[in-house]
Image (cartoon, rainbow, N blue to C red; front, side):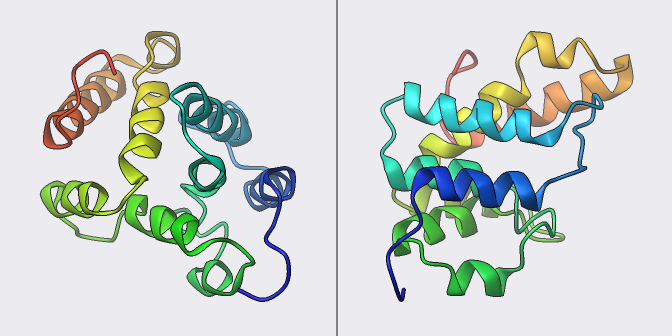
Length: 152
């Protein structure tokens, strides 16, 4: 990392700009999800590295930012490691994905906040029935693989 690390406000601005124009499955601005995950990490006692990773948790996976950008960004190694841990890889089995999260210090809290927001009843209620059922099953399975209880 060269230069001063990005502040949380700067990380938020980068994430919002990177996801500009994107919407979630319910058609809401994607930045609302990023904010909810960052706030979820903060509320669960997460530190600045984890909050920064929460803002960026989908950026590489969604091609909003490149892996090269992340590698070169003025961010802590821990933040970068967490972002890479929670970035799903094409064709990767859920067990391998969960294993990487569990093996990366700080990543579980970020994924926990992500799952909590994704699986929130108000958010799921905006989706059609088949999508809601599919995602509920997917999130339940991931929580089980990560050793998280149903309500976390």
